[in-house]
Amino acid sequence: MSIGSNIKNILLSLCIGGMPLLYAEPVIHPFEIESGIVIYEIYGGTQLTAETNLSIKGNAKLCFKEWGEIRMEEENGMVLTTGAVKHKQYVKRLEKQTKDSVITVDYKNEQLLERKKVKSKENDEDETQGLVKTGRQSVADLLCDIWEGPGVKKCIYKGIVLKSESHVFDISYVKVATEAIFDINVSDEECEVPDYPMQEFALFKDKVKTKNQYKVDNFCKVLKDTAYELKDNNITYSANNIEDEKRQKFINHISKDIYKRQKELLPALLLSMKKMRECLQTGENPFEANQCIESFSRMKVQLGTEEDDYIIFWDDKRKDALLDKIEDELIDLQSRIPCVNRAKNITDLSTCMK
Image (cartoon, rainbow, N blue to C red):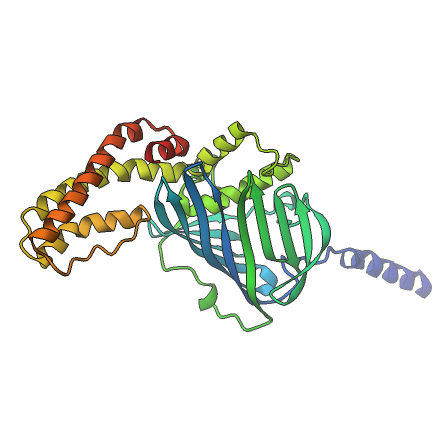
């Protein structure tokens, strides 16, 4: 074989061997920025029923490094209902993603729930899927691209969502960045989850998901997920074309946990009032009187009612006035309990308490 033939064979081998390198798929990261921290404000709400209003307030933090391959999202806030149904509950959610897994913090049971990521293009996150680019907007002093779809609007900067809005059945949920710091040295501590024991799941089965989907700490997630369901089905609902029956069904759907807590708390509140009345009748001084109302006051906070019940002065006149007030409230609540027991959803309950 000639020297020329050998050279040709070597070149051909090099070319063929190098082809996978030439055609290798580029590495695509979630974000186009290596590291950073974004601080968000959360707000929203609606008129749940004719007698009850709902508001959402809170804040969130996104901490990421390695171009978003490792990131942690934390949300803290409050869901509050006022009017006929009084309810207050604090929201706390934390989720961390690595290249291989998603870790969710279960604060109630003080444990970490881990599921492995399934490597598939179908499972790749795409914040713009099904949305249309409609313009640009400045958020946290950064110019981001606006993407919109039915019930959903996002403003995205280099893969990072700086603002997301959901509007479903005239219920609003907005999460908007107020501060963004990029390309900084993000420490492991800033992206760390609590030191709870780990519980592993190969995959979250449907029954695991639905078991907790109505909890108040997932209220906002339910609202956002429903917005995406409407988007995927190309359905648009706004305040102008809402069908009352469909809206009422949706309201009862997202308020299921609030309804369940109220069904438990209201009869317990009645029992607490009776015990407080009995205790106050024998109270001889402010210290004893405050001990009588302590448990009742804590329960009212859970119902979203904050009053300064602390007793400083205590005499027969003040004692009789307080007992008369408690008696009136007790009679009123007791008359509503049969209706509360029959209530099947938040709409029924709101009617009972108006």
